Amino acid sequence: MKFTSASANKLIRTLEDKKSYLLGQESNNSTYVLADGEKIEIPEYDFNETNRQIDEIDLKIRTLKHALNVFNTTTVLPIGITIDQALVEMAQLNNKLPRLDSLRRAKNKTRLSGGMAARRDVAEYQYLNYKTDDVEKVYEENLSRVQQIQLALDRVNQTQEFEVDITE
Image (spheres, rainbow, N blue to C red):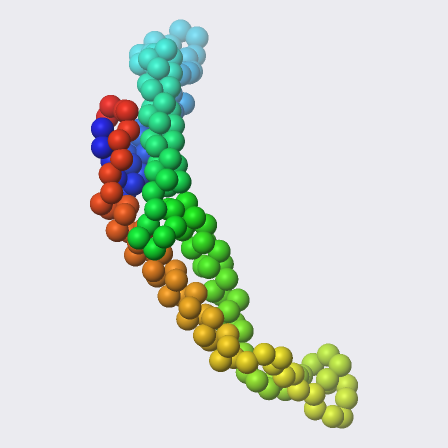
């Protein structure tokens, strides 16, 4: 069966939802409480059938995730890197952007208050030891790279298909 990355991930979410439902049903129906002399309708539950269905779902999820991993490690994006490399790079850049944003917003000169500065008669100032223009440039380059990677990923995830030996 053919999948795109997006459709494979959608099916994985659907399968995980179905498994969660089965586990919930099992939790609700695998035991029951009955007082002495009380008649009750025993909830419908078949351990073997439930377990078989869960194992089948798990196998499909494993198969799909493996196929996705292979696809991600072998598919080269138009920007010259594989999907798995792009995902790692994008995560690194997204983690880096807040630090760069803070550095680029800093003021060149800030008057200190409180602590040691409050006990002195002379005002103290904190100065930047870097150029905010340099940080701004790196910030913009990183942001542009994240956007470039995201667009390349979006395009491939929606259009490029791979084969998975699985039945829905």
